[in-house]
Image (cartoon, rainbow, N blue to C red; front, side, top):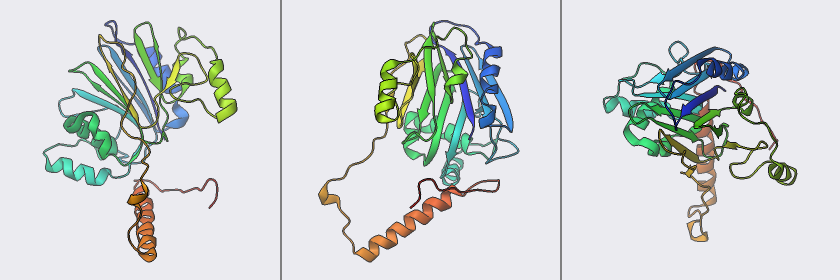
Length: 271
């Protein structure tokens, strides 16, 4: 688990506050106690608090591409990064780190927002394109990794936890009563709402693009839970179905055991 935070000026030019960005990262230190890093460019500031799992010696974030036109901060893990990395190297990409984070960055170079279709993992991603003056935010398919945003005075702030946003004293702190009603009824707010007015979550399976000079775009869905008609039922035997299920489960667990540190496992809910 890591923490990400950032500030982007989309309606006016100027360097974001380094002091504010550092405070936003610091309050997320419990998510990433190993190291921190920031990147500040014209109109954007990116911050990261890291828990080192892959690429222990060279994975400090933010990470840039070869010509430093793209910068990424990332919370989560890409389980198929080994295979994706090999594909990218064969296409001529040069890697500076051993991380899954840099794999995402080079995929984005090649495929843009469609890179999300190739990722097997859990993630909250922020990529800044300095050439286009454009920020790309994305969240994994089922929302395992959190990502919250708020817009105020021509700026968009984002972070892994809401309390990092509230370190900006200009952001109002007020409950959203409709969201509270949803929490008491459904256990959580629906859509992009949170318990606070003006603070939104990027929904699971969605991405958002923020361009300089434009109002931040609405979240765009790239994945929805698939529902299959009756004629798509399994066509093989019961034994073949059991063998396929066994293979899928073992392959899924094997991918999730990839790490450069000892791995622990836990079960919530029982079987």
